[in-house]
Structures are given as structure tokens and as C-alpha cells.
Image (tube, rainbow, N blue to C red; front, side):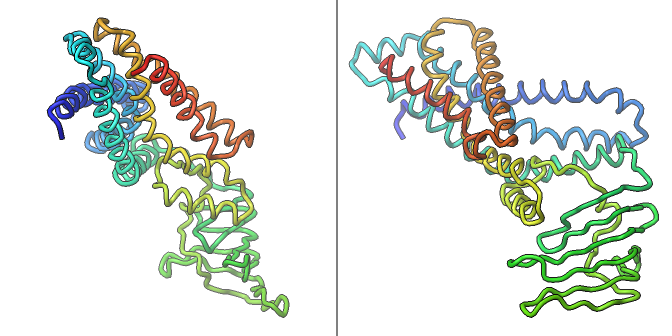
Amino acid sequence: MTIYTRCMMKRFLAPLAFGLAIFAILIFLGDTFDKMNHIVKSSASLWTILECLWLGVPYWAVRVIPMATLLATLVAMSGFVQSGEWLATQACGLETRRFWLPILWTSLAVALVAFAAQETVMPAAWARSRRLWREKVHPEPEYSMYSDVAVAVDDKLFIRTLLLRPKEGLMERPLLESVGENGVYSQLDARSATWDDAARRWVFQGGVERAFTAEGVVEQPFQSKVSDLDAPPADLIPRPVNPDEMSLREVLSYSHRVGRFGGSPREYEVAAQSKIAYPFANVVICALGIPISLRLRKSSRVASFCMALGVSFAYLWCMEVGRAMGVGGSVPPWAAAWMANAGFGAVAFVLIRRWDL
């Protein structure tokens, strides 16, 4: 590693850490103030509230890394210009890319770290934070009954019921399907089912067990049968599944599960692609920031901060538009997730080539 490389990396990493802290704190405080009305009315302990709020910090930190990367690029490159070093390198006939390439490679390393955090710390912390919020800080009202419930319990079990009474541990007209690689291979179709808290199983009453074999369907009636379904009543309450609370592998698994059980997996396919595309927005944003910073030249750090906000929000807007188009089926999931990166990356490439950087 050359002296120039170390110098530019230091110039980049210092404002990156500063920008990451500032952006994360600002968004964290904004989110906290937005929830303040519920927090002051909550009966949860102060420790629970603080735990709920601080567990959201990794999520916001990962989200604002592209903003911090752009700010760091603008500060590092504009400082290089203001000190006269940029002009000196050109006067000496040195290739200027020797000075901005280390910043680009460092942004790639930051992208890899962000991806690792997104797959390890962030999902667990965010899921815990949302669970504390729903159950203790601001409990969601639960109905006494839910109609037409359909839940994919795992990769092998799918439960549908006409009526679910979670507080009573009761299902009416439940249909439990066991799914293998070739589709449904058995069903439990019953009049009702009750939750056995001691056995931690659902017990089906007054129904028939169907086995789907190569020879045909084999039916066997029963009065009472302990099923393989071990999900407690509260876990069967239909709730939206948030991809941010899952790792890439979990999102892909859930997407596959939704597709196997007849649902539309597009939302989760787009989310899976976005989990790959978003961390590498750091490299794209950094590449775009290099020519922008040379145009700003001797502008103040306030101008750099405002520029970082403007470009970052434009990127996030494009990303959300792509996600909506992907979920709606207008474009393939991979195109929806990578649309913003491709567009901003193309602009960065054109500017760097045009200005011969």
C-alpha cells in the first residue's frame, strides 16, 4: 500500500465515520420523536423502551451508509482540491485516478461490511426491536377471532382455517397440508382443532386424514388426532412479514415457501435482490461523488452536506420507484432492485469519462 493510498483512505474514513454517526443519529431522533406520543403513554419500563429504541440503531446505520459514503467522498476530494494537491498532480503529469481509486476501493470494502451487518446484526436487532414495540411498548390490539386465515408455518406445513380464536386456542374448519418436493402429500381436514398447551400441539377433532399416493387418495376418518402443527395460537395470527427482519437466506426461503403455497412471491423476490443491491450502492454513490466533488471544488462543507442529502434522497426515490414497479410486476425483480444502481452508475461512468478523470 502506497503513501498516497493510505493518505486518501484516511481522508475518506474520517468523514465517513462522522457522516455515519450524524445521519444515523438524526434519523434515530426523528423516528423517536415520531413515536413519542405512544412512548409517553406506554406502560412499559424505561429499560424496555430504551432497548426497543437502541436496537433500531443498526437498522438506521446500515440504511444511511450510502449518504455517509457520498459525504465522505465529497469532503475527501474537495479537500484534495482545496489544498492544491489536485493541481500539483496534474502539473507533474501523474494520473489523477491514482488518488481517487483508493477511495473507490475503500467504498467497496465498506459495502462488504454493510452487507455482512445486514445479514447478521441488523435483522436480529430490528426484529427484536419491532417485537418489543408490538408487544410491550405499543401493544397492537388483537381481535378475539380472525376469519379465513392462511399461514405457511414452515417449508412443510400450511394451515388454512375458516375461523381462528387465538385467545381460546380454537380453530373451526381447519385444513392442515403437509407439502413435499412434489406438492401436497397429506391433509388433515377437520371440523375443529384445539390447542393442547401440555403437548404443545394442535389436536384435530372430527375429520379425515388424506394421503396422496401414486395409487390415488387414501382417506381415513378420525375422532381426535394430534397433529404435527406446534405453532401456538398467537403465531397463527396473520401479520405482514417484514423482509428487513430476515437475512437474505431467510427471505429467499420465505419467498420460495409463499410461491409453493400459491401466493405471490414477487415482494420477497424484490426484497432479496435489494438486499444484494443496496449495500453496493456505496460504490455507485462514491463513483458519482468523485466528479461532483471536483465541480464543487472550493465549496464549503455545508454545501457538501446538502449535496450529499440531495443525491442520496434522489437515489432512495429511484430505489423505491423500482421496488414498487417490481412488486407490481412491471419489471423483473432483479431489474427493480438494480435499477437505481444501474442509472446512477451510468451517470457516474459518463461524468468520469467526459471529464477525463
